[in-house]
Image 1 (spheres, one colour):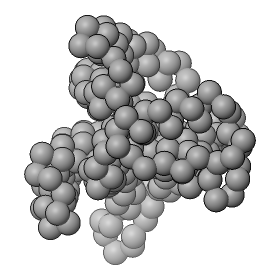
Image 2: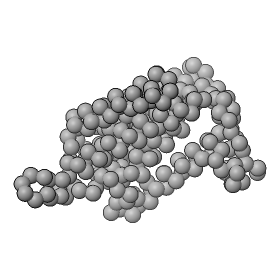
Image 3: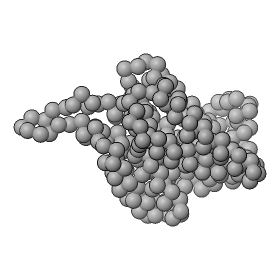
Image 4: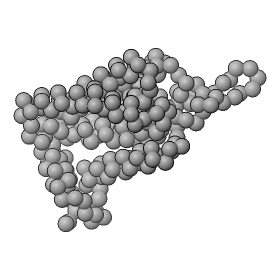
Length: 241
């Protein structure tokens, strides 16, 4: 298993390269820098399920600050005033900093489903949905940065699970526990895939991908998504009800 500093160095290096790629793709420099920063941060996120003390506290502190900032566009498009945005941001900070951390401590185990490919996609889709910008390239860049950074942690853990010392290559007990689609816990696996399916469904609604299929989603959710997307200038096609 790679050390905390090695994960930071690896994901940060990837983040620098990701900024350069975003620039080549014509993404605004500020969005590219933000995407690179998210990539660097995401390389540490899988360790949120660890009980290692200080690094985990620092991770939740950074995540608590980043979460409300990513929601600024969505709050603005939803018609929040400056005062309401500040209050919502403060509430989000305390929820992530203390509430979410407590839930993680109680419900997760190290190298469980939070160390998996579904978790990487969940994190990317959460960033995409949170950052409701009219610039689709920016949203995709941020989500891609999250996925790339998260995946870098899993890949590095798998690399360090190979013992290449000596004449024979041997695999440590941790081999295969990072890049996986399921875990030994049926409940944890089911919850992770349920989250993944739900967020994928919300992304599909957000983009209007379900409209050609004439799939009916809950009226309140459909109206909220249409309203916020219209305010953000995102073209949306709604299904007939």
